[in-house]
Figure 1 (cartoon, rainbow, N blue to C red):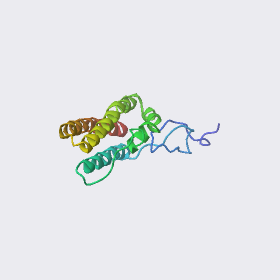
Figure 2 (figure 1 turned 180 degrees about the horizontal axis):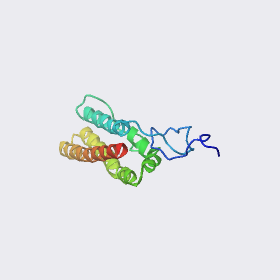
Figure 3 (figure 1 turned 60 degrees about the horizontal axis):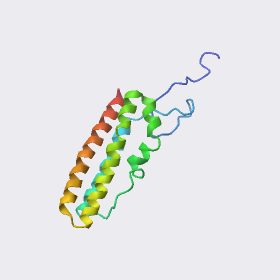
Figure 4 (figure 1 turned 120 degrees about the vertical axis):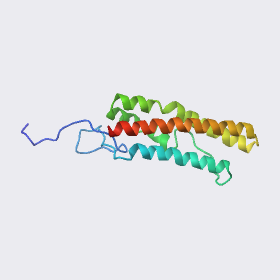
Amino acid sequence: MRHGTAKAMLPIRPLGGTLNPDFHPGFFRMPDSTFFLLRLNDHIVYLNRIKATLEQEDTFCGTDYHLCKLGKWLYGDGPAQADGIGSAMRAEFDGLFAPHKAFHEASSIALEAQKNGDDASRHAAVTRMHVLSNQLVSILLKMDSLARA
């Protein structure tokens, strides 16, 4: 191979799961500075829609944890993207699964409790939602920090 005639095949960081045709298949583009903050925003939007429904300002009834925007990323391109950045990123990524699933379960319980007029259960579920949301936010912010390192 002559010098300068081939492009280097180096692993690079992910962006939205789209493949960079200038690099070896299977590698992802570097994330821009907002990639993980967008995942965080996906979660906050979902949380706010649940809260609006509980305050009777919306009729959103939630989704399965696989089907929200964050869940689609977690169960879609996310694992490959986390692996592309490194083991510390993958460890943080793997830490999203349990609180994400539990968050959806708590939001479903809150909505059901509201429908049944069970204020105590609704309050407990909303509190649990916020605790889990804080965990998710912390992990996503750590992932953003790792991606920028």
